[in-house]
Image (cartoon, rainbow, N blue to C red):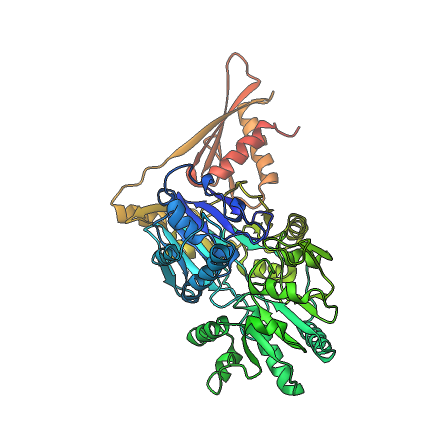
Length: 606
């Protein structure tokens, strides 16, 4: 039987370093190629030696697909293509192609120029890698080769994020990447059609979470920011350059305008301008409200939010700063945090998920003393955390309800969870398998390096002649239903790589053949003391009582006829009580013939 194999090289029972290998219909596809924010050694990138010990990846992969521009989904791309070696096509949407190299270069600067790491990709490698990218549009079916095709669907989450359907023949897989089923202030909700894939590979970051009302969360966020600013404190909001940053900027901008507040709001330099540029360029990827107001004014040009300079961090008085990156693992957000952490008047608001190993994750788990890497912050190298810490999920990931919603939308045959923590995945896996969907769904959650094999039942499309359909309907059977299988009798004709089911008469006419009658025969031995004629009479009476809706004839020539089935009785001269019942039927009545032979083997009623 054909099967589909799925192996996570990253994001298997873990968040970060998304990289999933899929083997389908003889094709090998890599889904995402991310890095792990929690590691600074070799573990930061996926283990590509799983694919090949030596040699380039080009020979083993048919294509690479990147779902969106977040580094945990694309951060290892230049390393994979330029340092390990891959020359094949890399597919992503137009916004992802535009934004991806900017974030990769930013990440390279922090890692190489500031931390001084070696064995890392260069600026030139990023450029060479992006030359291999093939951009695609939403709902555009792209033919990778003669057999393999891919199609992108809107995923919400961030600008340009997409879910991908991968299809080879009648087998298919859908990979969600990161997605959000709830529309927000600047993006719409994820959507996919009822494509019924063999496997739906879904993220499960918030597998056990059912989020509270978005309006309540926004109210709490504004209240906390306002209170801190009013008491003269500073608010640090670590964000990634694009995505939640724009969402929260729109929220604070409207609040500051309404309340007429004067405390300054800053955003990491450089990235705001770039973000504005890309949101203008890809305005069709945003939601309806943004597109409507865009004619009058650009929602991403802020009156109250200014570019941040690192010297401002030491300024006295209240302020709000959006700084990158979002998990406090490096960069400007970490530098500002070091300066403000010792003052209890200040506040840190974490608006999204933090991967294990990052400073953000440690603080959210209540750690009050941090050993800082690199140059010591204090003489001992320990940082005391005195500022207030708040976690408010403005994350653009689907929660448990959202994941269930997507399953109902796509109606997959099997489910495979990635990009989540093992315990949370286990909970969601049980919920999916217990839930009553259209069909029973098996759910898998492989760890990194573990292969899940799913056997598929490929369907072969067959055209059916109208005459044959009409004949089947005339026989009084139930009407055709896509969800209920039904047996059809006809002749299958294969011509020009297509299959047609027609009536035998039509097949003979089309092919210029003459009909041959094929009959099946069967012998059943029976002990009966009566004469052959009496035994046949008893068989006739028995069949009349069992087969009430069938036409049964007792013919004078010593046979019983049921439809096309002929029944005769003979006995041997040596053993008169041993009767041999001969049954003969045409292939149309094969089912009934088998039933009668089984029935007669059980004997006749006394």
